Image 1 (cartoon, helix red, strand yellow):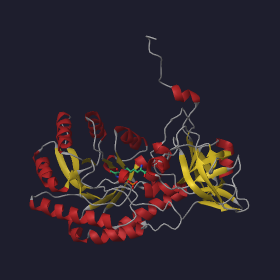
Image 2: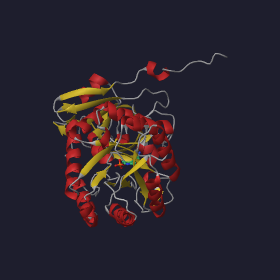
Image 3: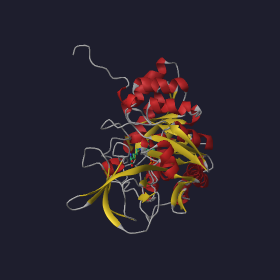
Image 4: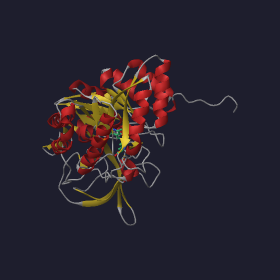
Length: 424
Ligand code: LLP
């Protein structure tokens, strides 16, 4: 259910007009709907419940790690998939129980491994042979046993943008499925590690269920080989990756479709009573957030019209980085009259655009507010201060209530921690 809807021609987040938020808090502004987050979480969790008796949704918090968003999901029951000590710190601050924290990523440093072990975690998702050795070494030094899963790379084509495809053998992620058995044997021989599971994540913004079920088939073969070696598992982590519909009418499997597909694919493992872990990011927060911006100028170019807004690629870099599509809709509706333009930001790069040759639903005017839709995932989290632009504020809405969950950065924040060298 979309929680960003028009009421009497005014776009609202739940029951709060976006124009009110823009007046109170300024733009650019990230706006999240609590109800949308909760609905997305419940839809995914119940889809997973249909696939497996024992389950754990570990929110891939890189999608949107802001404490307000994270805490909302944690309170609803989510664990987290983390990829740095910084994310683990945030997870702890949001009150995530240690046994609901998994730690993924190809480049875990020794200090990050120690940090994770100190506070406790459900498992490391080990991505290479040398990483296993380092985890074992750090854990031995701390006189602990590190819980581990091996992230395998099943070599399946996720059929998504090449930058966010992770399960092909050409990608840096995971241990090649053919070498995983040997790595598990090695792990078995290490006293300071404890094998708890098997993991894979094949990519992001997947628009079909087939790559997930292909990956599961490969994992099942490996689970059988491990059983032959006397290695039992507690959990199977299927990663994240389920896509969302950025364009109207896009046909994307729903969480229920996903749950049904993986449930069927996992049938051969039912007797093992594994906990099935998923690491969704986008599907939980993507549609629950928008980027609100204001039109600065409508500029007639030689060949096209540019609608210049006050948010840029530093606020939302998905279009620049992946040529990603985001719907852009007016906050105050006027007479509907199609108008074709490029919607661009103020940053000094041609790559700073939100849409090329987009048909807007009405003629834009300077001062108009615009909503860039489905910006909740990988929106704020990938934002930067490029061009020395302070990062946007974030606000969460629930019914008629709203709370700022992250202050807008100030000019002073921009130079915080910087200094002139003593020798100039
Ligand atoms: N698990 C692992 C190990 C991951 O690396 C990721 C995402 C996820 C789970 C969550 O994937 P999701 O459910 O959100 O698809 N910046 C890109 C997406 C990068 C995804 C990185 N890894 C974008 O804006 O499309």
